[in-house]
Length: 178
Image (cartoon, rainbow, N blue to C red; front, side):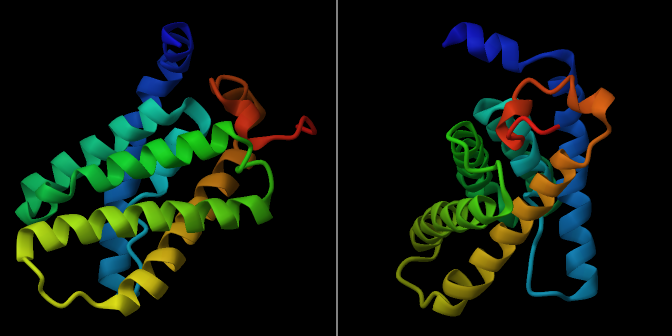
């Protein structure tokens, strides 16, 4: 297991993590400015998790949340959410859920359930038993995480071959035809 983690943390992984953190922040900022009912602030986390492994995905999510928490302290208590998103995406990718578009849709749905449950528990802890908007958890969260998973998958599939060859978990997004 330790050997696999070492293999996952190649130089390309350390290059991708800060790029993914920027993508997460930029995606979230852009969507907010466009006033869309999505966040897309986990695209980078899911991408890194899929192509470099669950631990790198969790680190990407954590770093993103720490930075966002410095800018907007309301993010800080929710640090487990992007960490678990990274772990879930990486594990699902290792299980073959990011090899074709239809499985990615289901993976995005599973990731949204993980995020929703975690967010709800944290919100309840912070705000007590305040009314939470069920529409968010039933509609917006799944749409957001499915979209993020599809964007991450599409990005991985269409990387230039020279970069794709460097990815530690490239087998997670290809069935061998590449």
